[in-house]
Length: 561
Image 1: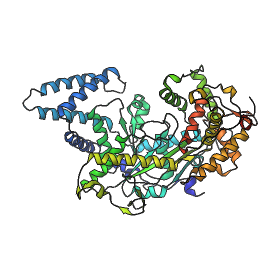
Image 2 (image 1 turned 180 degrees about the horizontal axis):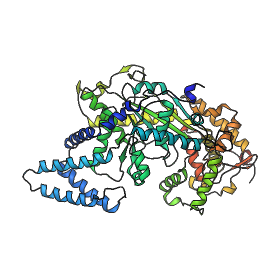
Image 3 (image 1 turned 180 degrees about the vertical axis):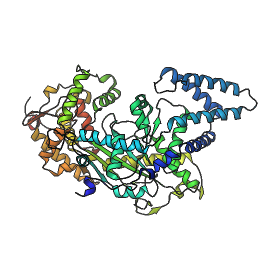
Image 4 (image 1 turned 90 degrees about the vertical axis):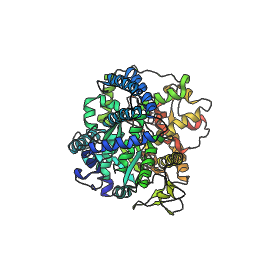
Protein backbone atom coordinates (compact mmCIF):
# COMPACT_ATOMS: atom_id res chain seq x y z
CA UNK A 1 0.00 0.00 0.00
CA UNK A 2 1.52 3.32 -1.12
CA UNK A 3 1.77 6.50 0.88
CA UNK A 4 -0.93 8.03 -1.37
CA UNK A 5 -3.30 5.15 -0.59
CA UNK A 6 -2.93 5.74 3.14
CA UNK A 7 -2.22 9.43 3.65
CA UNK A 8 -3.29 11.05 0.40
CA UNK A 9 -1.77 13.12 -2.38
CA UNK A 10 -0.02 16.45 -2.04
CA UNK A 11 -2.20 19.41 -3.00
CA UNK A 12 -1.84 20.58 -6.59
CA UNK A 13 -2.49 24.14 -5.28
CA UNK A 14 -1.27 24.27 -1.66
CA UNK A 15 -2.27 27.96 -1.28
CA UNK A 16 -6.03 28.38 -0.93
CA UNK A 17 -5.78 31.84 -2.47
CA UNK A 18 -4.85 30.16 -5.79
CA UNK A 19 -7.94 27.95 -5.91
CA UNK A 20 -10.39 28.54 -8.80
CA UNK A 21 -13.33 28.74 -6.43
CA UNK A 22 -11.55 31.44 -4.41
CA UNK A 23 -10.94 33.52 -7.55
CA UNK A 24 -14.61 33.06 -8.46
CA UNK A 25 -15.76 34.23 -5.02
CA UNK A 26 -13.62 37.35 -5.18
CA UNK A 27 -15.40 38.36 -8.39
CA UNK A 28 -18.88 37.57 -7.05
CA UNK A 29 -20.41 40.95 -7.92
CA UNK A 30 -19.00 40.82 -11.43
CA UNK A 31 -20.32 37.29 -11.90
CA UNK A 32 -23.80 38.35 -10.76
CA UNK A 33 -23.90 40.96 -13.52
CA UNK A 34 -22.71 38.45 -16.12
CA UNK A 35 -25.22 35.90 -14.86
CA UNK A 36 -28.08 38.38 -15.20
CA UNK A 37 -27.13 39.06 -18.81
CA UNK A 38 -26.65 35.35 -19.57
CA UNK A 39 -30.03 34.45 -18.04
CA UNK A 40 -31.86 37.31 -19.75
CA UNK A 41 -30.56 36.15 -23.12
CA UNK A 42 -31.81 32.63 -22.40
CA UNK A 43 -35.25 33.84 -21.31
CA UNK A 44 -35.65 36.22 -24.22
CA UNK A 45 -34.61 33.50 -26.67
CA UNK A 46 -37.37 31.23 -25.38
CA UNK A 47 -40.79 31.03 -26.99
CA UNK A 48 -42.43 32.72 -24.00
CA UNK A 49 -42.98 36.46 -23.90
CA UNK A 50 -41.74 38.50 -20.92
CA UNK A 51 -45.36 39.07 -19.87
CA UNK A 52 -46.11 35.35 -19.93
CA UNK A 53 -42.99 34.61 -17.86
CA UNK A 54 -43.86 37.33 -15.35
CA UNK A 55 -47.48 36.31 -14.94
CA UNK A 56 -46.62 32.66 -14.31
CA UNK A 57 -43.75 33.47 -11.95
CA UNK A 58 -45.67 36.03 -9.88
CA UNK A 59 -48.63 33.67 -9.51
CA UNK A 60 -46.49 30.70 -8.45
CA UNK A 61 -44.41 32.79 -6.04
CA UNK A 62 -47.49 34.26 -4.38
CA UNK A 63 -48.85 30.75 -3.89
CA UNK A 64 -45.53 29.49 -2.51
CA UNK A 65 -45.04 32.36 -0.07
CA UNK A 66 -48.60 31.89 1.19
CA UNK A 67 -48.85 28.11 1.37
CA UNK A 68 -45.28 26.99 1.98
CA UNK A 69 -43.26 29.69 3.79
CA UNK A 70 -39.90 28.96 5.44
CA UNK A 71 -38.06 30.88 8.12
CA UNK A 72 -35.16 31.42 5.73
CA UNK A 73 -37.37 33.35 3.28
CA UNK A 74 -36.82 37.12 3.08
CA UNK A 75 -39.05 39.03 5.48
CA UNK A 76 -40.55 41.05 2.60
CA UNK A 77 -41.44 37.99 0.51
CA UNK A 78 -45.24 38.38 0.38
CA UNK A 79 -45.07 42.16 0.05
CA UNK A 80 -42.48 41.91 -2.73
CA UNK A 81 -44.59 39.66 -4.94
CA UNK A 82 -47.78 41.64 -4.36
CA UNK A 83 -45.91 44.77 -5.38
CA UNK A 84 -44.55 43.10 -8.51
CA UNK A 85 -48.01 41.91 -9.46
CA UNK A 86 -49.18 45.51 -9.37
CA UNK A 87 -46.19 46.64 -11.46
CA UNK A 88 -46.87 43.99 -14.09
CA UNK A 89 -50.48 45.11 -14.37
CA UNK A 90 -49.46 48.76 -14.75
CA UNK A 91 -46.87 47.87 -17.41
CA UNK A 92 -49.62 46.58 -19.70
CA UNK A 93 -51.00 50.11 -20.18
CA UNK A 94 -47.67 51.96 -20.14
CA UNK A 95 -46.00 53.76 -23.05
CA UNK A 96 -43.60 50.86 -23.71
CA UNK A 97 -44.96 47.63 -22.15
CA UNK A 98 -42.19 45.38 -23.47
CA UNK A 99 -39.43 47.59 -22.09
CA UNK A 100 -41.11 47.90 -18.69
CA UNK A 101 -41.70 44.15 -18.49
CA UNK A 102 -38.09 43.44 -19.46
CA UNK A 103 -36.95 45.70 -16.59
CA UNK A 104 -39.16 43.83 -14.12
CA UNK A 105 -37.86 40.52 -15.47
CA UNK A 106 -34.29 41.69 -14.98
CA UNK A 107 -34.98 42.69 -11.34
CA UNK A 108 -36.39 39.24 -10.60
CA UNK A 109 -33.36 37.56 -12.17
CA UNK A 110 -31.11 39.80 -10.06
CA UNK A 111 -32.99 38.84 -6.88
CA UNK A 112 -32.70 35.15 -7.68
CA UNK A 113 -29.02 35.46 -8.62
CA UNK A 114 -28.19 37.03 -5.26
CA UNK A 115 -30.21 34.35 -3.48
CA UNK A 116 -28.57 31.42 -5.29
CA UNK A 117 -24.91 32.45 -5.18
CA UNK A 118 -22.86 31.63 -2.10
CA UNK A 119 -19.27 32.48 -1.20
CA UNK A 120 -15.95 30.85 -0.42
CA UNK A 121 -13.87 31.95 2.54
CA UNK A 122 -10.39 30.39 3.02
CA UNK A 123 -10.48 30.92 6.79
CA UNK A 124 -13.82 29.11 7.11
CA UNK A 125 -12.52 26.31 4.91
CA UNK A 126 -9.45 25.83 7.13
CA UNK A 127 -11.69 25.61 10.18
CA UNK A 128 -13.90 23.08 8.37
CA UNK A 129 -10.83 20.92 7.73
CA UNK A 130 -10.16 20.75 11.48
CA UNK A 131 -13.82 20.20 12.39
CA UNK A 132 -14.42 17.47 9.80
CA UNK A 133 -11.22 15.69 10.78
CA UNK A 134 -12.51 15.55 14.36
CA UNK A 135 -15.95 14.40 13.20
CA UNK A 136 -14.66 11.62 10.96
CA UNK A 137 -12.08 10.54 13.53
CA UNK A 138 -14.99 9.83 15.82
CA UNK A 139 -17.28 8.26 13.23
CA UNK A 140 -14.62 6.03 11.72
CA UNK A 141 -12.47 5.14 14.74
CA UNK A 142 -13.11 3.40 18.02
CA UNK A 143 -10.76 5.23 20.34
CA UNK A 144 -11.70 3.46 23.55
CA UNK A 145 -11.80 -0.17 22.67
CA UNK A 146 -9.54 -0.81 19.69
CA UNK A 147 -6.21 0.55 20.72
CA UNK A 148 -6.22 3.90 18.93
CA UNK A 149 -4.16 6.61 20.52
CA UNK A 150 -6.49 8.87 22.48
CA UNK A 151 -10.25 8.89 22.66
CA UNK A 152 -10.69 10.51 19.26
CA UNK A 153 -8.04 8.57 17.35
CA UNK A 154 -5.49 10.07 14.98
CA UNK A 155 -5.82 11.92 11.68
CA UNK A 156 -3.87 9.22 9.84
CA UNK A 157 -6.36 6.66 11.14
CA UNK A 158 -9.13 8.65 9.47
CA UNK A 159 -7.23 8.76 6.20
CA UNK A 160 -6.73 5.00 6.29
CA UNK A 161 -10.43 4.45 6.92
CA UNK A 162 -11.46 6.87 4.16
CA UNK A 163 -10.47 4.82 1.13
CA UNK A 164 -10.27 6.54 -2.25
CA UNK A 165 -9.47 4.63 -5.43
CA UNK A 166 -9.99 4.78 -9.16
CA UNK A 167 -8.72 7.31 -11.71
CA UNK A 168 -7.15 9.70 -9.20
CA UNK A 169 -4.03 10.67 -11.16
CA UNK A 170 -6.08 11.35 -14.27
CA UNK A 171 -8.57 13.55 -12.42
CA UNK A 172 -5.69 15.53 -10.87
CA UNK A 173 -4.24 16.04 -14.34
CA UNK A 174 -7.58 17.12 -15.85
CA UNK A 175 -8.11 19.67 -13.08
CA UNK A 176 -5.49 21.87 -14.76
CA UNK A 177 -6.83 21.30 -18.27
CA UNK A 178 -10.46 22.29 -17.97
CA UNK A 179 -13.50 22.28 -15.69
CA UNK A 180 -14.11 19.11 -13.67
CA UNK A 181 -17.62 18.04 -12.65
CA UNK A 182 -17.80 15.19 -10.14
CA UNK A 183 -21.15 13.38 -10.23
CA UNK A 184 -21.48 11.10 -7.17
CA UNK A 185 -24.05 8.62 -6.00
CA UNK A 186 -26.11 10.14 -3.19
CA UNK A 187 -27.16 8.27 -0.06
CA UNK A 188 -26.71 10.52 2.97
CA UNK A 189 -26.74 14.11 4.19
CA UNK A 190 -23.09 13.44 5.03
CA UNK A 191 -22.20 13.08 1.34
CA UNK A 192 -21.31 16.71 0.60
CA UNK A 193 -19.07 17.00 3.66
CA UNK A 194 -17.50 13.60 3.10
CA UNK A 195 -16.79 14.13 -0.59
CA UNK A 196 -15.44 17.62 0.03
CA UNK A 197 -13.19 16.27 2.78
CA UNK A 198 -11.97 13.38 0.63
CA UNK A 199 -11.27 15.63 -2.35
CA UNK A 200 -9.22 17.95 -0.17
CA UNK A 201 -7.40 15.54 2.16
CA UNK A 202 -6.97 12.42 0.00
CA UNK A 203 -7.02 13.50 -3.66
CA UNK A 204 -5.30 16.84 -3.15
CA UNK A 205 -7.42 19.05 -5.41
CA UNK A 206 -9.17 22.32 -4.48
CA UNK A 207 -12.74 22.65 -3.26
CA UNK A 208 -15.70 22.39 -5.63
CA UNK A 209 -18.93 24.38 -5.80
CA UNK A 210 -22.00 22.35 -4.87
CA UNK A 211 -25.74 22.82 -4.42
CA UNK A 212 -27.26 22.93 -0.94
CA UNK A 213 -30.99 22.84 -0.26
CA UNK A 214 -32.29 26.20 0.95
CA UNK A 215 -33.99 24.40 3.85
CA UNK A 216 -30.55 23.83 5.39
CA UNK A 217 -30.20 27.57 5.81
CA UNK A 218 -32.96 27.49 8.41
CA UNK A 219 -30.23 26.45 10.85
CA UNK A 220 -28.16 29.54 11.52
CA UNK A 221 -24.90 27.77 12.38
CA UNK A 222 -25.14 25.43 9.38
CA UNK A 223 -26.00 28.37 7.11
CA UNK A 224 -22.98 30.32 8.32
CA UNK A 225 -20.56 27.59 7.27
CA UNK A 226 -22.02 26.22 4.05
CA UNK A 227 -22.57 29.74 2.77
CA UNK A 228 -18.79 30.26 3.01
CA UNK A 229 -17.69 26.86 1.68
CA UNK A 230 -18.62 27.11 -1.98
CA UNK A 231 -22.26 26.10 -1.70
CA UNK A 232 -24.97 27.70 -3.81
CA UNK A 233 -28.57 27.66 -2.64
CA UNK A 234 -31.21 25.52 -4.31
CA UNK A 235 -34.86 26.12 -3.42
CA UNK A 236 -36.81 23.08 -4.60
CA UNK A 237 -40.11 24.80 -3.83
CA UNK A 238 -39.59 27.25 -6.69
CA UNK A 239 -40.90 25.78 -9.94
CA UNK A 240 -41.38 29.00 -11.87
CA UNK A 241 -39.58 29.43 -15.23
CA UNK A 242 -37.51 32.48 -14.24
CA UNK A 243 -36.01 30.81 -11.14
CA UNK A 244 -35.33 27.54 -12.94
CA UNK A 245 -33.58 29.31 -15.81
CA UNK A 246 -31.52 31.44 -13.42
CA UNK A 247 -30.40 28.35 -11.50
CA UNK A 248 -29.54 26.46 -14.68
CA UNK A 249 -27.73 29.50 -16.12
CA UNK A 250 -25.72 29.89 -12.91
CA UNK A 251 -24.50 26.30 -13.27
CA UNK A 252 -23.72 26.72 -16.98
CA UNK A 253 -21.97 30.08 -16.78
CA UNK A 254 -19.87 29.13 -13.75
CA UNK A 255 -18.72 25.99 -15.61
CA UNK A 256 -17.80 28.15 -18.59
CA UNK A 257 -15.74 30.34 -16.26
CA UNK A 258 -13.84 27.38 -14.83
CA UNK A 259 -15.66 26.72 -11.55
CA UNK A 260 -15.44 23.02 -10.72
CA UNK A 261 -18.67 21.50 -9.46
CA UNK A 262 -20.11 18.57 -7.58
CA UNK A 263 -23.51 17.67 -9.07
CA UNK A 264 -25.64 14.96 -7.46
CA UNK A 265 -27.26 13.80 -10.72
CA UNK A 266 -29.96 11.80 -8.95
CA UNK A 267 -31.16 15.10 -7.50
CA UNK A 268 -31.76 13.70 -4.03
CA UNK A 269 -30.69 10.86 -1.75
CA UNK A 270 -31.47 7.33 -2.86
CA UNK A 271 -34.52 6.35 -0.84
CA UNK A 272 -34.24 2.64 -1.58
CA UNK A 273 -30.48 2.37 -0.94
CA UNK A 274 -29.89 1.26 -4.54
CA UNK A 275 -27.60 2.99 -7.02
CA UNK A 276 -29.52 5.61 -8.99
CA UNK A 277 -30.82 4.50 -12.39
CA UNK A 278 -32.74 7.69 -13.17
CA UNK A 279 -30.95 11.03 -13.27
CA UNK A 280 -32.12 14.64 -13.37
CA UNK A 281 -31.69 15.60 -17.00
CA UNK A 282 -32.16 19.33 -16.40
CA UNK A 283 -29.04 19.45 -14.26
CA UNK A 284 -27.00 17.49 -16.79
CA UNK A 285 -28.30 19.63 -19.63
CA UNK A 286 -26.58 22.64 -18.03
CA UNK A 287 -23.28 20.83 -18.61
CA UNK A 288 -24.11 20.32 -22.30
CA UNK A 289 -25.21 23.96 -22.51
CA UNK A 290 -21.93 25.17 -21.01
CA UNK A 291 -19.78 23.12 -23.38
CA UNK A 292 -21.77 24.28 -26.40
CA UNK A 293 -21.45 27.90 -25.24
CA UNK A 294 -17.66 27.49 -25.05
CA UNK A 295 -17.49 26.01 -28.54
CA UNK A 296 -19.78 28.58 -30.15
CA UNK A 297 -17.91 31.47 -28.54
CA UNK A 298 -14.43 30.04 -29.18
CA UNK A 299 -13.70 29.72 -25.45
CA UNK A 300 -10.91 27.21 -24.77
CA UNK A 301 -12.62 25.45 -21.86
CA UNK A 302 -13.39 21.74 -21.92
CA UNK A 303 -15.68 20.17 -19.34
CA UNK A 304 -14.90 16.76 -17.88
CA UNK A 305 -17.40 14.52 -16.07
CA UNK A 306 -16.18 12.14 -13.36
CA UNK A 307 -18.67 9.59 -11.95
CA UNK A 308 -18.01 8.78 -8.30
CA UNK A 309 -19.40 5.94 -6.19
CA UNK A 310 -19.62 6.47 -2.44
CA UNK A 311 -19.83 3.37 -0.26
CA UNK A 312 -20.94 3.34 3.38
CA UNK A 313 -21.36 0.51 5.85
CA UNK A 314 -24.05 2.68 7.42
CA UNK A 315 -26.40 5.49 6.42
CA UNK A 316 -27.70 7.31 9.46
CA UNK A 317 -30.95 8.28 7.72
CA UNK A 318 -31.55 4.79 6.26
CA UNK A 319 -34.65 3.99 8.33
CA UNK A 320 -36.48 7.14 7.27
CA UNK A 321 -35.35 6.81 3.65
CA UNK A 322 -36.51 3.22 3.20
CA UNK A 323 -39.82 4.09 4.85
CA UNK A 324 -40.33 6.84 2.26
CA UNK A 325 -39.41 4.50 -0.58
CA UNK A 326 -41.71 1.71 0.56
CA UNK A 327 -44.59 4.12 1.17
CA UNK A 328 -44.32 5.44 -2.40
CA UNK A 329 -43.86 2.04 -4.04
CA UNK A 330 -46.21 0.02 -1.88
CA UNK A 331 -49.02 2.54 -1.35
CA UNK A 332 -51.85 0.65 0.36
CA UNK A 333 -49.66 -2.47 0.75
CA UNK A 334 -47.28 -0.71 3.09
CA UNK A 335 -48.01 -0.07 6.74
CA UNK A 336 -45.42 1.90 8.64
CA UNK A 337 -44.76 0.80 12.21
CA UNK A 338 -43.93 3.56 14.64
CA UNK A 339 -41.15 3.13 17.15
CA UNK A 340 -42.13 3.41 20.80
CA UNK A 341 -38.58 4.37 21.73
CA UNK A 342 -38.06 7.95 22.86
CA UNK A 343 -35.67 10.37 21.15
CA UNK A 344 -33.45 10.45 24.26
CA UNK A 345 -33.23 6.67 24.38
CA UNK A 346 -32.38 6.53 20.67
CA UNK A 347 -29.69 9.15 21.15
CA UNK A 348 -28.12 7.28 24.06
CA UNK A 349 -28.07 4.05 22.09
CA UNK A 350 -26.48 5.86 19.14
CA UNK A 351 -23.75 7.28 21.39
CA UNK A 352 -23.03 3.85 22.87
CA UNK A 353 -22.67 2.41 19.38
CA UNK A 354 -20.50 5.35 18.38
CA UNK A 355 -18.12 4.69 21.25
CA UNK A 356 -17.79 0.99 20.42
CA UNK A 357 -17.72 1.14 16.64
CA UNK A 358 -15.05 1.16 13.97
CA UNK A 359 -15.92 1.61 10.29
CA UNK A 360 -14.69 2.72 6.87
CA UNK A 361 -15.94 4.59 3.82
CA UNK A 362 -15.07 4.13 0.14
CA UNK A 363 -14.94 6.74 -2.61
CA UNK A 364 -14.31 5.39 -6.11
CA UNK A 365 -13.51 7.79 -8.98
CA UNK A 366 -14.69 6.47 -12.32
CA UNK A 367 -13.33 6.90 -15.84
CA UNK A 368 -13.50 10.61 -16.76
CA UNK A 369 -15.71 11.35 -19.78
CA UNK A 370 -16.62 14.39 -21.85
CA UNK A 371 -20.12 15.90 -22.01
CA UNK A 372 -21.12 13.37 -24.70
CA UNK A 373 -20.02 10.41 -22.60
CA UNK A 374 -16.79 9.70 -24.51
CA UNK A 375 -13.69 8.53 -22.64
CA UNK A 376 -11.01 11.18 -22.14
CA UNK A 377 -7.33 10.59 -21.43
CA UNK A 378 -5.02 12.44 -19.03
CA UNK A 379 -4.42 15.19 -21.60
CA UNK A 380 -8.16 15.80 -21.98
CA UNK A 381 -8.52 14.35 -25.49
CA UNK A 382 -11.77 12.49 -26.27
CA UNK A 383 -11.98 9.00 -27.79
CA UNK A 384 -14.88 6.93 -29.10
CA UNK A 385 -15.47 3.27 -28.27
CA UNK A 386 -13.13 2.19 -31.10
CA UNK A 387 -10.29 4.28 -29.69
CA UNK A 388 -10.48 6.96 -32.38
CA UNK A 389 -9.92 10.55 -31.25
CA UNK A 390 -12.95 12.79 -31.70
CA UNK A 391 -13.53 16.54 -31.57
CA UNK A 392 -16.59 17.92 -29.78
CA UNK A 393 -16.86 20.87 -32.16
CA UNK A 394 -18.20 18.51 -34.83
CA UNK A 395 -21.10 17.50 -32.59
CA UNK A 396 -22.41 21.05 -32.14
CA UNK A 397 -22.71 21.96 -35.79
CA UNK A 398 -25.08 21.34 -38.67
CA UNK A 399 -23.72 21.31 -42.22
CA UNK A 400 -20.38 22.44 -40.80
CA UNK A 401 -21.99 25.50 -39.17
CA UNK A 402 -21.96 25.79 -35.36
CA UNK A 403 -25.47 26.22 -34.03
CA UNK A 404 -27.88 25.74 -31.14
CA UNK A 405 -30.21 22.74 -31.42
CA UNK A 406 -32.21 21.95 -28.28
CA UNK A 407 -33.58 18.69 -29.70
CA UNK A 408 -30.09 17.46 -30.56
CA UNK A 409 -28.77 18.42 -27.14
CA UNK A 410 -31.63 16.68 -25.34
CA UNK A 411 -30.40 13.47 -27.01
CA UNK A 412 -26.85 14.25 -25.86
CA UNK A 413 -28.14 14.75 -22.31
CA UNK A 414 -29.80 11.32 -22.27
CA UNK A 415 -26.62 9.74 -23.65
CA UNK A 416 -24.55 11.42 -20.91
CA UNK A 417 -27.00 10.23 -18.23
CA UNK A 418 -26.68 6.67 -19.52
CA UNK A 419 -22.87 6.83 -19.44
CA UNK A 420 -22.90 8.12 -15.86
CA UNK A 421 -25.21 5.30 -14.75
CA UNK A 422 -22.88 2.81 -16.47
CA UNK A 423 -19.99 4.38 -14.55
CA UNK A 424 -21.84 4.04 -11.25
CA UNK A 425 -22.43 0.35 -11.81
CA UNK A 426 -18.91 -0.32 -13.01
CA UNK A 427 -17.05 1.56 -10.28
CA UNK A 428 -19.19 0.68 -7.29
CA UNK A 429 -17.13 -0.99 -4.55
CA UNK A 430 -18.88 -3.93 -2.87
CA UNK A 431 -18.42 -3.68 0.89
CA UNK A 432 -18.56 -6.69 3.18
CA UNK A 433 -21.70 -5.27 4.82
CA UNK A 434 -23.44 -5.00 1.44
CA UNK A 435 -22.60 -8.64 0.64
CA UNK A 436 -23.82 -9.91 4.01
CA UNK A 437 -27.09 -7.97 3.79
CA UNK A 438 -27.69 -8.86 0.15
CA UNK A 439 -27.15 -12.57 0.65
CA UNK A 440 -29.10 -12.81 3.90
CA UNK A 441 -32.16 -11.05 2.45
CA UNK A 442 -31.87 -13.11 -0.73
CA UNK A 443 -31.95 -16.31 1.32
CA UNK A 444 -35.08 -15.09 3.10
CA UNK A 445 -36.70 -14.36 -0.30
CA UNK A 446 -35.74 -17.78 -1.61
CA UNK A 447 -37.24 -19.44 1.44
CA UNK A 448 -40.53 -17.64 0.82
CA UNK A 449 -41.04 -17.79 -2.96
CA UNK A 450 -44.81 -17.45 -2.60
CA UNK A 451 -44.56 -14.10 -0.79
CA UNK A 452 -44.32 -10.66 -2.35
CA UNK A 453 -41.86 -8.12 -0.96
CA UNK A 454 -44.33 -6.40 1.35
CA UNK A 455 -45.40 -9.75 2.79
CA UNK A 456 -41.76 -10.68 3.42
CA UNK A 457 -41.25 -7.41 5.28
CA UNK A 458 -44.12 -8.39 7.61
CA UNK A 459 -42.47 -11.65 8.69
CA UNK A 460 -41.84 -11.47 12.46
CA UNK A 461 -38.10 -11.06 12.96
CA UNK A 462 -38.18 -13.76 15.66
CA UNK A 463 -38.91 -16.26 12.88
CA UNK A 464 -35.78 -15.35 10.93
CA UNK A 465 -32.94 -17.78 11.67
CA UNK A 466 -30.32 -18.50 9.01
CA UNK A 467 -27.16 -20.50 9.51
CA UNK A 468 -23.84 -18.72 9.05
CA UNK A 469 -22.67 -21.68 6.94
CA UNK A 470 -25.57 -21.03 4.55
CA UNK A 471 -24.59 -17.37 4.32
CA UNK A 472 -20.99 -18.32 3.47
CA UNK A 473 -22.01 -20.92 0.89
CA UNK A 474 -24.45 -18.58 -0.85
CA UNK A 475 -21.92 -15.73 -0.77
CA UNK A 476 -19.37 -17.90 -2.56
CA UNK A 477 -21.92 -18.50 -5.34
CA UNK A 478 -22.67 -14.78 -5.58
CA UNK A 479 -18.97 -13.88 -5.77
CA UNK A 480 -18.39 -16.53 -8.44
CA UNK A 481 -21.25 -15.02 -10.46
CA UNK A 482 -19.91 -11.47 -10.06
CA UNK A 483 -16.43 -12.56 -11.12
CA UNK A 484 -17.91 -14.14 -14.24
CA UNK A 485 -19.34 -10.85 -15.49
CA UNK A 486 -17.65 -9.31 -18.53
CA UNK A 487 -16.74 -6.07 -16.76
CA UNK A 488 -14.76 -6.51 -13.57
CA UNK A 489 -16.51 -5.97 -10.27
CA UNK A 490 -14.75 -4.10 -7.47
CA UNK A 491 -14.55 -5.62 -4.00
CA UNK A 492 -13.45 -3.88 -0.81
CA UNK A 493 -9.97 -4.73 0.48
CA UNK A 494 -11.47 -6.75 3.34
CA UNK A 495 -12.50 -9.45 0.83
CA UNK A 496 -8.82 -10.34 0.56
CA UNK A 497 -9.28 -12.13 3.89
CA UNK A 498 -10.90 -15.57 4.07
CA UNK A 499 -14.59 -15.24 3.18
CA UNK A 500 -15.76 -16.22 6.67
CA UNK A 501 -13.76 -13.37 8.18
CA UNK A 502 -14.94 -10.91 5.53
CA UNK A 503 -18.58 -11.78 6.17
CA UNK A 504 -18.14 -11.46 9.94
CA UNK A 505 -16.71 -7.99 9.27
CA UNK A 506 -19.81 -7.21 7.20
CA UNK A 507 -22.16 -8.52 9.89
CA UNK A 508 -20.43 -6.32 12.45
CA UNK A 509 -20.41 -3.20 10.29
CA UNK A 510 -23.74 -3.26 8.45
CA UNK A 511 -25.82 -0.32 9.63
CA UNK A 512 -23.48 -0.09 12.58
CA UNK A 513 -25.04 3.01 14.17
CA UNK A 514 -28.70 1.98 13.99
CA UNK A 515 -30.43 1.28 17.27
CA UNK A 516 -31.73 -2.01 15.84
CA UNK A 517 -29.20 -4.49 14.49
CA UNK A 518 -29.51 -5.07 10.78
CA UNK A 519 -27.88 -8.49 11.18
CA UNK A 520 -27.42 -10.08 14.60
CA UNK A 521 -25.97 -13.29 15.96
CA UNK A 522 -28.72 -15.39 17.53
CA UNK A 523 -26.07 -17.82 18.69
CA UNK A 524 -22.55 -18.72 17.54
CA UNK A 525 -23.74 -20.25 14.28
CA UNK A 526 -27.07 -18.60 13.50
CA UNK A 527 -28.03 -15.20 12.16
CA UNK A 528 -31.15 -13.09 12.38
CA UNK A 529 -32.24 -9.47 12.11
CA UNK A 530 -34.01 -6.90 14.25
CA UNK A 531 -35.30 -4.89 11.27
CA UNK A 532 -36.19 -6.45 7.91
CA UNK A 533 -36.71 -3.07 6.24
CA UNK A 534 -33.17 -1.98 7.08
CA UNK A 535 -31.85 -5.35 5.91
CA UNK A 536 -33.73 -4.79 2.63
CA UNK A 537 -32.26 -1.26 2.34
CA UNK A 538 -28.66 -2.46 2.61
CA UNK A 539 -29.44 -5.45 0.39
CA UNK A 540 -30.46 -3.03 -2.36
CA UNK A 541 -26.91 -1.71 -2.68
CA UNK A 542 -26.10 -4.80 -4.75
CA UNK A 543 -29.42 -5.04 -6.57
CA UNK A 544 -28.08 -3.68 -9.86
CA UNK A 545 -25.85 -6.73 -10.40
CA UNK A 546 -28.98 -8.80 -11.16
CA UNK A 547 -27.70 -11.86 -9.30
CA UNK A 548 -30.01 -14.76 -10.24
CA UNK A 549 -32.08 -16.19 -7.40
CA UNK A 550 -32.78 -19.87 -6.94
CA UNK A 551 -35.02 -22.15 -4.91
CA UNK A 552 -33.52 -23.78 -1.84
CA UNK A 553 -34.81 -26.28 0.65
CA UNK A 554 -35.40 -25.43 4.28
CA UNK A 555 -32.95 -28.12 5.34
CA UNK A 556 -30.16 -26.39 3.40
CA UNK A 557 -30.63 -23.05 5.07
CA UNK A 558 -32.53 -22.93 8.32
CA UNK A 559 -30.67 -24.02 11.42
CA UNK A 560 -33.67 -23.71 13.69
CA UNK A 561 -37.28 -22.57 13.53
